[in-house]
Image 1 (cartoon, helix red, strand yellow):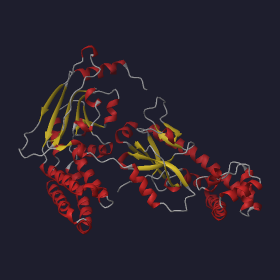
Image 2 (cartoon, helix red, strand yellow):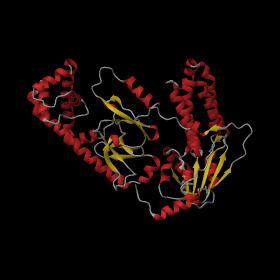
Image 3 (tube, helix red, strand yellow):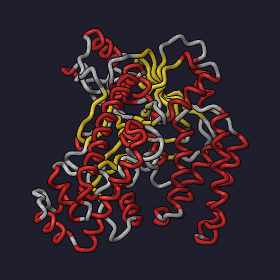
Length: 510
């Protein structure tokens, strides 16, 4: 754990002992009507909501609703997002009426309410926030639940000239020792961890939410003054009058549904090609920031580059085993096409030899795989042993055939393979080519780590921690785009996936 200065501890103690928690309700009738229409559609669907047809529709609708409830976005952001969503829904309307005739009416009603919302397109949260902060010279922190929304919130604040009044943060920032004069929480308190309120980092906390969202927070005894436990914060509610016909929506209903590990695994199984699974690998699913996911190999030897901002080391960039990755870390993945960022850099290092070296690598592996498919693993292993291979076994054979490996560790095993596939007289030439690839991969890994380390040391890692995502570029003949994604969740179980899926970020359920 990182050491905390005594002065900061004293500030945190003072924040927790005094001050107030207030609620401010904001009316937005059009958004409330849209939200209720969406809830009615979900209720009408029942178990059908889990059908492939509905999952992307409901997820997009709920994501749109959540974003409007969780961030004070300006009118430009709202108006920009609605037309695309409306077009998407209209394209699905005919199929909905055809396949799910009973749900056609509530589905159309959702579209109608979306159009009513579009006609309004008023930023009530942002307007109320501007009114609240007018003339304030306080050190204000604006707390947003989802890091992915922070850039849009900052753009909205800067657009109305309010950017200088706020530091936009996510809940993780409030685990640190920085204190503020005031924290304005956007969204119901139930969306946020208990420590936001029970161990506050501000003298005053204002919870700003829409009036039709049900919310309640009960202060619990905390560490402050342990001999006589009492709550020293004053709780106040500053709410606009509610219409008698107001229908409350539970705060938890508005949250985005968690990604389903089992559903992702089932989709992968459906897409698999029976009988052609020689390159399948055991992997875990990692849920990343902004709704992305990735498969990373679950092998004990598999490693990945990560940025660990909670490390007490001065160097947050490090390579660790995949099974040591924890939520909150930032895993580095290639996002400019293809999963492995080592390969394109290694090919640049090999220059004109890259194409022929890769062809040689592909050729001997394809011949070995053909022997395996035609004769079976037992016969191939037996023949390799007779030809001088001392490490021929089922696990190594699969590894040698895999596109993820370059060559055997020992020359004798490689020579036995080349004899088996009829290329014995070219063994030395192929071996040198494979060594060329291996050396290029090693140099590429060192080069990438060095360049990333330079960029990490220069960049503001506070932005990475606030937004949960940051892009880096490895320059060369062809630039390689690498993104640091914060890990949000990790599947407890492993599954077998095609090797090409490893390290390739994707958006599930969409």
